Every structure is written in C-alpha cells, then in structure tokens.
Length: 297
Image (cartoon, rainbow, N blue to C red; front, side):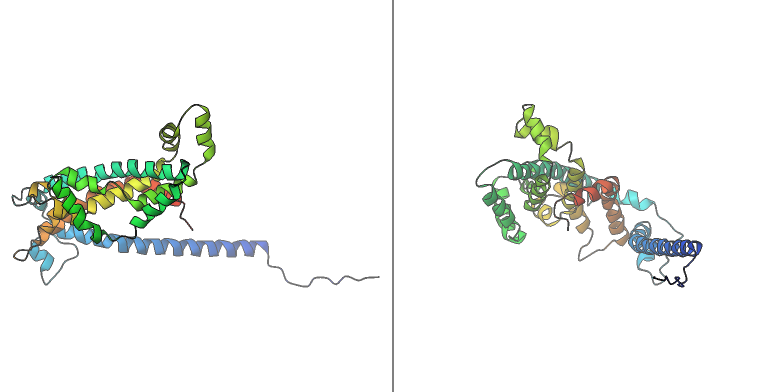
C-alpha cells in the first residue's frame, strides 16, 4: 500500500503572478521608450544646431554668449544663399539631382541585370565572372582614380554630365547584392513565366522586378544618397562653376581668406533636405530590402 504525501509547497496566487508580469512588462516598455527617446534626442540635436546656426548671424554663432534659442531669427539668410553671385547654389542643387537620379537609375538597371544573369543564366564561366566582380571590391578607388580621369578627359567629358555619371554606373558591391537576392528569389514564379513563353528578359522584367520592389527601393535609397554626397570625383571633373555639384559648392564657402559661417550652415541645411525626404519616404522599403539581401545573419 502506497501513501501519498500532500504537496505543502506554497503556490503564488494567479492574481499575484499576473500583477508581477504586468509590472515587469510596464517597466520594460518604459525602459524601451526611455532609451528610444534619449537616442532620438541625441540624433536630433545636431540637426537643431544646424538649423539654429543657419538662421543666425555670424556673431550669434561664434559669440562668447551662445544662446540655445536665439531671439533674432534671420530668414533672409535663405535669400542671401541663393542670391550669392560667387556661387550659383540653385544650379549646383540641380546638378546634384541630375547626377544622383541618373546614377540611381543606371546602377539599378545595370547591376540588377548583371546580378540576375549571374544568378539565373546557366553559363560555365558564370562563377569566374562573379569572382572577377568581387575582385573589383578589393581594388582601392585611389588606384583607378587617375586612369579614370585620363579616360574621361580623353573622351572630352570634363565639365559634363557624362563625365560625372557614366564612370559610376556600375558597382561591384551592388551587383553582388543583386545576385545574392536573386539566388533566393522563388524559381517557381520564373518557371511559370517560361511555361507562358517568356524568356530570361521577359521573366526578369515582368515577374522578378514587380515582385522585388522593396529590394530595388532599398538599393535606390543607398545609391541616391551616395551619388548626392559624392565629392572628390565631381570636384575633379566639374572644373567649371556651372558644373559644380552641391558638395563642391559647399566647399567653396570655406576658403583660407573668408569663412561665412551662417552661409555654410544654411547651404548645408538646404543640401540635406532632399536626403531627408528620400529617407523618410523610402525608410520602410529600405529596412525590408536590407532584410532580403541574402547576407543577413
């Protein structure tokens, strides 16, 4: 005959457990929002200082008594920037827009086609070509800078959009990202397209691209920002002030003789507005696209 020993361990009432879980969850949420708030504050402070200095005088920027919230706001600094006869800032904004948009469209087309071909078209030398593309990533840009300039100069592309755009229409890293993405793209969709009589180009254009817009948007965002912020190549190719991009125009405000602080800050604030709009508009697709690159952990 066996006897059972009653369980004398104390059990916590369900209400106490729920209260503890609720309190822990509340504290965790509060800590999360606090951390996010602090990070957002630290991220936005430089932007506020930039706008504050852009709408101030040089004395208010460099004075001994620096005010966080100045009372004298000079909206006329915007007109002064665009009326400056020494630098055609509006023209430089247009040049940067043309260069960034053209490079974005060109890189998306060229690199996506190259990546799709390396991932899908059966060719015995495809891996060798892919390794050569990866090899270009190991060559420093400073090594190819002078030969690229000599080639562009011999073609007569100095001070032209062709010289600013065409040499940057291919990126080995972007081609690598597209190949990795297309390797993970469902083959069933492409096989169904081939049953309907589409070739590689038809499957790419009518099936793959419409179902990969998130990834294309992510690459487009990164490429646009890179093209807009380019400085060294536009500085060398755009020798005439009429072909300056916005980054080259910004550098012209800082010389050995004069430094006009409020103009520099205003020009910087205006130059980053397109990047802010592009990032805010495409940030959702940027996160989703990066998650689909095929190189996530």
